[in-house]
Image 1 (spheres, rainbow, N blue to C red):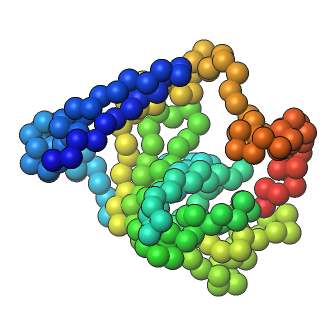
Image 2 (tube, helix red, strand yellow):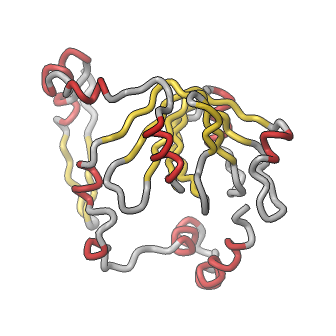
Length: 222
């Protein structure tokens, strides 16, 4: 078997582990034997439709992560709004407007190729998340698009998701990260969007881009 070296970089140093490939999990039976059986409630909590309590939770969420997959790979896209991030049409359907972005269209291309999607809803301050797994298509129906008209603008299309399953995710991940706790905010200065762009193109003028981004973005929210 070909042994592939694995390199881990940390602060400019490289740690080479040439034996990593021999320690991989390569089969489902091996995986299950390591972890054991699922917690019973992790299965019983799954619903095939949006129940009243899940409707209450999802209707409160202003932010989600949309996960898709296509021939060019996977994509995870943050989606947010100043009100409910999706419109619940009925217990088996939600609408997600595609507001203005950078026109890469990664998620939309994936949905055209492969309609399987996952939505992960978050609510500021809550340590739980709620997930919808389903099948999606892109609608340009005038009546669907008009339902999201805002400030004289409308999305170019709406992602229509048919629910396959909905369930809440346990709070451990957000508890570990202390995501919403003010004293857990990282104190170190983070790279800006302009700096990322300059790293990719040394000729890019990062400072005015960062300085004006907030005001420019406000004009392109919807």
